[in-house]
Length: 129
Ligand code: C2G
Image 1 (cartoon, rainbow, N blue to C red):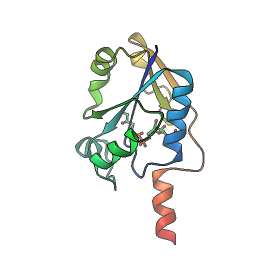
Image 2: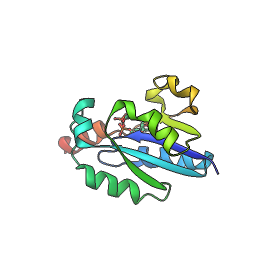
Image 3: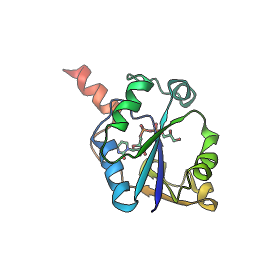
Image 4: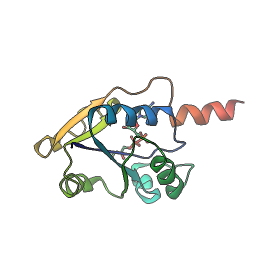
């Protein structure tokens, strides 16, 4: 059984996130998702609309997700990869090449993003109504 791990904020959980999880589960037996805490979002320079607990609950409710952990720091990835026996770190293509340093620990895979949807676009659409 192969294990994949991915990281993100998942604010205003949308179809782009769901499609990514779906694509990952088409390739791997098990998907662990690390959700950025509100504190880590501040470090990332992101202010999420939906609080951490709710972002976790929505990701957990997704059929493609097997386990959810917290993402609290940039440097936790190697620890997570080892702790969960991860075979592949998988991210959407906006992160292409950004995590290649972890190729010494596991496969690093970048999958195409879902075009036409993003948290930023959703916010703009709501404001424009
Ligand atoms: N994504 C996607 N298609 C979209 C939007 C997002 O495939 N239309 C993917 C992104 O590529 C990412 C994941 O969904 O892999 C989560 O996106 P964000 O919530 O924006 O996460 P981000 O802020 O990029 O955090 O340590 C890594 C960071 O925590 C990643």
